[in-house]
Amino acid sequence: MTDLTDLILAARRAGAAADPAAELARLQREVAASAADVLGWLPGAGVDEQVLHAEPALTLLRVEIAPRTEYPPHDHLIPACVAVLRGSETNTFHRADGGRLAVVGETETAAGAVLPMDAHVIHSVANRTGGRSVALHVYLGDLFGLSRTIWDPATGEPGPYSDERYFALARTTAPA
Image (cartoon, rainbow, N blue to C red):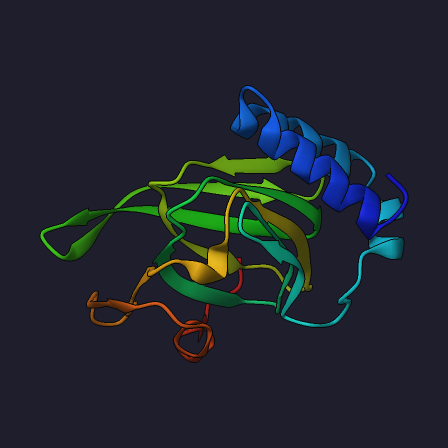
């Protein structure tokens, strides 16, 4: 892969495969393994969230998380796979329980690793380090065309997802 066009074409092929989630994870492992090269041509450096591509069957985002920042719990409703290119992301997984959330697990994904997520995942994502993290998030569908949910981390109350709420509900975390 040498540029964004190659990446989009490879992601489309993954989405059309017999097992799209497995093929997407394979592609993201390839991206993560060549992180230094990918960071050289991937647009959006220094931006918190850069939409790289969006179509009905595929969404690609470059996501950078500032040091010691945590974003609120939310769902995607479509399969996703994250390739961490620099730094690390901590994902805390939740289960909706009577309108409230219960924590069911947590994982740290460092540069060079990938995190596949199925369509039913509810998670919050954080960068608990002192440096900025960078990741490629690929979704098998139109992330922006869905009626998603976001949970207020202070109250646990669910509400409709919007990017404005997502960024407004971000909070500072303690150093790792």
